[in-house]
Length: 496
Image (cartoon, rainbow, N blue to C red; front, side, top):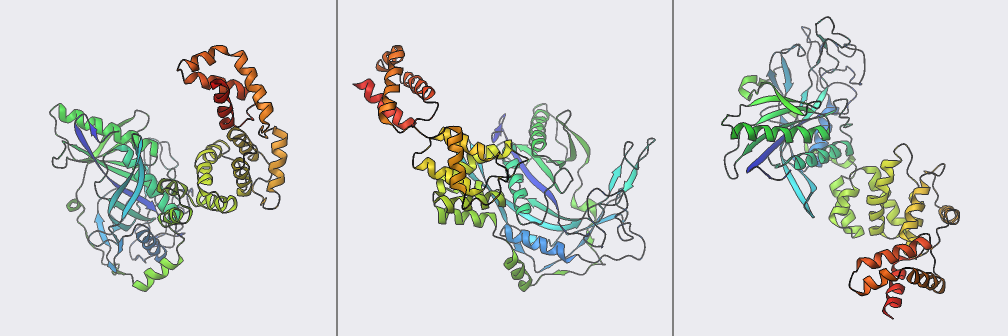
């Protein structure tokens, strides 16, 4: 979606709830394992029984520190917890413990690349804050384990699950930008291991605040689309909401601030309730929890134990392997891909070729052979080397790489045997490139004799006619000729 839609500018901000990867809840020792029977992972504190007191889970704090370091944010030396008051059946205390005035993570930014026309543009979204809080329970209705006969039940297994709520500035201007931001944020939290990122299980849930305005005007009234747990539905929901708001304004209606839900079956959003503001929640400091104090020594220790961050690794790939910034960013979308690239680049000595193959054919085949292990990087390196010296052509290299995905034990280290494995596959698939110029010229003569019309059309100025001749030659050669050599010999013969 473009920045201007029917003359309106789209303004989007995000609130993302990332479930932290601790084994227990944020203020109790109850397990956070997914899929347990209702109410089997809820202790007295989770159920808000009288006399229970919360105790801070330091593992949740460390994960918040890691996130702050990953996005270049300020980590508050002193932050406080507050009570966010509202009444709902799955919130037995009548309030949620969260952070309001002083969050643990302040500022920061998330950058990503986005295609705009024929260009790829770097975008940056500023973060306002990231704060720790507990999750609420879950209401189960008629067709659930606890519901039935028109009644609803309450499952408190999720109550107290540790969350990091990540809030952006309203910096995004299209659904494309919003999805790209969400994917990059998802990559960051899973890369550093603070969240498993499972959107189907609710570990990574996004709320999109969407409004529209005339260019240069004041911000419009936003509507918050809740609990978007799929990148596909995220884009559909935002696009529908934008169209709906524009239609309402054009028809003379006023947009009312509201919380809405997206129905993937109808592709529409619908209002759930009017949107609350901070005053409606009557925040006040939680008297049962002291201020959270984070020393600089603690931050430095966490920093020293963190793995190399994707943005840092991407910068290193640009510096050490002379890769374009776009390549480096794409290759650091996951630890597995980054490690595969670096091992391939070091083995074959051709970083840019390794990058091209991994972003292209490797990605395609990984999506196709989704249930198979990747071939050893030694095999891909050997293919790149043989393509580089002209033993096989591009078409043959692709067929060869496809064949390596079907090898038994494809993840075995072929460091000593990669050359012989590839040699056997080249022979078995008859992929060795024709380098006999005399034989190739004979084939070209035969094709020219059989296709006089193409020759005349090319001489008359139709450049596309040459492609037909090249295609015919490659067909006779069974794809084993060097296309550049074919073109050179073909032009020479036609010219003379």
